[in-house]
Length: 490
Image 1 (tube, rainbow, N blue to C red):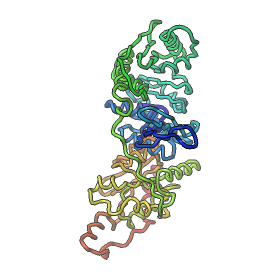
Image 2: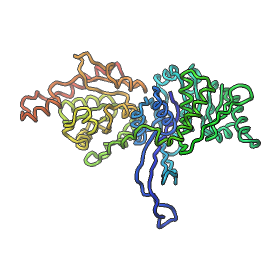
Image 3: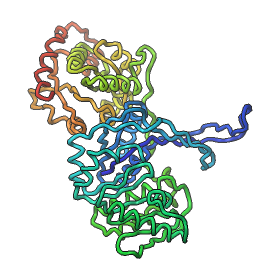
Image 4: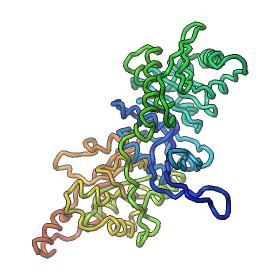
């Protein structure tokens, strides 16, 4: 399990061939850009790439940046346990030319206040095989409820600190500051050799934090481990040159995985030094991450106004949450919008104070239903849904399932069409486990007779008219059915 602050990192590569005419600064002509999770999110992606089952506890804002993080983490195989985050998702944008960083643009403002963790998060901390706290000084590691749970867990805890963050909880197995962080956190006065300063810093932090061990990373020179007595263990690193961005996260995640397997602290640090060096030599973050995930499905504004897209969904959800309301979400392809869909959407909307529809993109529908679908493109499907009075926002997603969208939206209730006659129910839905991460509930709406998108398409292709369709279902009937199902959940 990884716990900490997650950022959205974006690398913008380009060419510089001229100076700006109104100021003597280089002009970067963008050629390509790539997004990735940063901070604790990057450490979680590294651990998942090494074959571990990884859950990430972090704070995510109700904005497009938060939605993008949800997509990236889900694609990397990381289970996201999102805490509400006031404010905006922090972003770090690096402008690069020929492999060198020209400028870093940070946005997102000061750190917001993370919301309360769910019972599922506390159970996760108690049952993890190992915990990495990846602190980037934005408040997650300082949350008192989380700190109490970290103190109580029997799992080995690795603490990767930040100078603006809190002290490690007492008893951590290993703390992993880098050299400047260790000096600043320990308030080590200058004087002596580099190793002497690192050793004094490590010993001071080990005593102050009551940590079992402190490993000070020394960049290309390896790491110094203070773990027993007054004599440190120095672990040299093999020669490595390259982009060091993310090397500290790679070090910490590797050490955590080693401790989870039962390694000694000294063995874990040696493995982490070797892995971090290989990571730098192998091309750094660009080479280590999984294949890039495409950009979020474009936000449609024509006809749908401001009701379509991650920004629109985030604004609606944030407004309802601030007023203490209930957020309801549902999802599907909605390839041919028919009366059955409308009745279900109307019923879902009456369960709360807003309804967000998670809509499968064209690529997602084709992957689920075959190359001849969808019949109606995502832009038109989104506009039709957004035009309904019962729909407050539409969020288009590219994945086969809405897991990434749900992990970001964190609705209180997820409404799904189903059939009680077949024995199905909320407990059988894959979304049930996802909703449980933040204390949400799933509700199954019984199918309303008389409408099927697949049958409608087949009838149209066969040249049959609509005279055989039963009368449109009554929305009031659907509301009554949903309320009876949701009563226990709410």
